[in-house]
Figure 1 (spheres, helix red, strand yellow):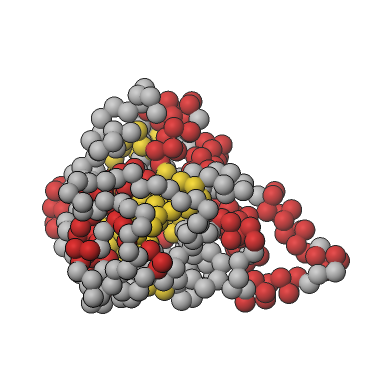
Figure 2 (cartoon, rainbow, N blue to C red):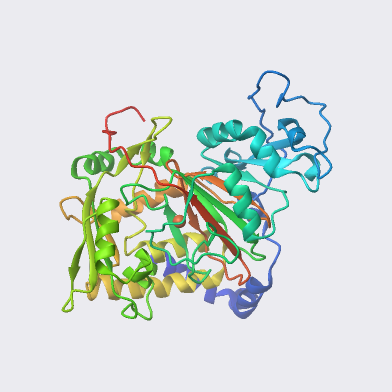
Length: 459
Ligand SMILES: [Fe+2]
């Protein structure tokens, strides 16, 4: 908070230094070319960091050869769309200030950005290889392919993962996109609202295994990345005393949804915008109870008219990855903390230096303090330790810091398709004032969390 006030004071001194405050504001809105530091943190394919494809299969198919023909188009048989026709690279981590460490996602592009590359043919021929890369890197990004509509996204995603779902018990308001069954708007909240890093629906007993995002329209100005963070590394790097405390006390989630029409009109808590009718797509309370029982979480009805949905339960803070058995930081603790919204605005301001984010952050800190500290209101979804103890500011700060250390910022390009292992890699949205950004999402069927003991195993 003190840091923010200092920044505001410094910015208002700019006219004295020969610059103009209003010029800073107006140029921030017009700027389409990122500053140099921004280029480093949001680079697309970086050709300085090629990685070697180490996967080869027998019988000559999919064999990686250096001098393979670099064509694969509509006249080529899908069988010809093999590993020899693509090139790969990695995006940089934010762990180092010079962005010199390249971690994930694995970016897969047609060689020489060949037009009309048969992506579906490539996926069909190489699904095992793609799965292997998703397991190893946590996420793969298909870039430079011809994807233009939600219907096309759905076809490509179905090729990657035939077992899709359109049941959504998450907390971001989202709508199905016309012309598709499994493709939804990523979040129906204003694009300048940051969405903190999370594994999709990790607070439920059975979150989706895989997630898919695609850019039907990339943001033209700063921000708007769907940033990723490696939650395997977050588990490893979280302070030892906090990790031990979480393992001992577990977590408690309390989820509250009002009936349709009773949601607050103005709030910074996006979860509170969803009514229980939105979440369960029914107005029948007994059906809600039926779904909840099937999906294994408790329900009680509160309020004078017994029309407020409340679900309260304990949850493991960590999970073992279902395939690799690596320990993973597996919770929404920081997402549903009252400090996170203003803190994420502040983090975004520090990264892209858009003055509007700084002002938004300052306002959000004041509002959050008034709402959740002075008025003692609760967020729609609150997380505490299992015994009800709230997270301290220090604990929350160290969680956010560790998550940010393992983030990577994907600057969207139109037609990008991102596949994420939802049991390893988190995602979130960086705020942007671009109005045209259009990102869609699809997800696979759910997988039950194992809840096996994690703490004590070597990270
Ligand atoms: Fe999400």
